[in-house]
Structures are given as C-alpha cells and as structure tokens.
Length: 193
Image (cartoon, rainbow, N blue to C red):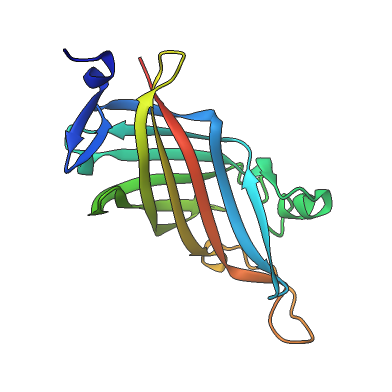
C-alpha cells in the first residue's frame, strides 16, 4: 500500500526528494544569516529577519530554480548601534536599495545530498554571480498536513564587489570589517497548493 507521503516524494539518485512543484520558504522556519570578521580577531554574526523565496522543483531536479528577496532593513546583529550603521548610507542603505535579490541560474549535483546552486546576487543595485553550497536536509509532512523539505546553504562573497566598501584601517594592521562575508542559510519550504 502507498502512503500519502509517497505521492509527494520520489526517489532520485538514491535520495527521497520532493515531488515537482512550487514551494515557498517558511518564514517561521528559516534563518538568512551572515558572518563577518571584526577587527581581524573575532566574528560578528547577524541575520536578515525578513526574507521570502520561491523554489520551483522541476521534474528533472537539476532544472529546479530559486528566486529570493531579502529586506535590507531587517538586518539584525543584536546590537542597535551597529544595526543602525548597517542600515545607513555607508552600508545597505535600504531607503535607496530596499532589497537584496537572488535568482538561480543552475543546479549541479555534487554527491549524495550535496548540490551547488549557481545564481546572481544583487546588493546595492550591483549583480554578481555566486555559488551556494547546498545540502538537502530531507522531505516530510508537517503535523498540519503541509508537504515540506529542509535545506541549508552557504557561500562567501567579497562585499566590496557589491559596493559595500566602508571600512576603517587599524593601527595594528588590517581593517575593522572583513571584506569576505560568509552567508549561511537554513530553511524549510512548504509546497504551495
């Protein structure tokens, strides 16, 4: 006998993956985070509290696509003064550039549940190619009857390539804020009717 979850999953290359369809990022189960080095000696972590994404799972999983929008003003590092600076004209300037955008351009299978998602990231009106290392975390059905799947993704960008160039040189050498920023994403996506 086939269970109802079988109707929304399928086997592909040794993985149980979601059926083809459109999925939306679950706002209650996501983290769009980042890590920057501070004064060359420590790490500062933060996240964007408001982000949406539509994930289209294709019949051929390697033809799937993602479109995501992040609200720049939702940046949160748990430190009010720093957050105000990051929302100002020297950094994200959400009054002029309210969103950061991502649009995928391809998917490559790496091994097992690991994939590479290529795409274009736009920050401050500057668009650059990026590659996200993606791990498919599994598929299931929530207690509320929603078909879901989980994933994590990460990449590293050079913020100066996007026009985020503000910095302060340190007397001891180096700079106040690293050029390299690690992006870390965790999420669940819900199948749309």
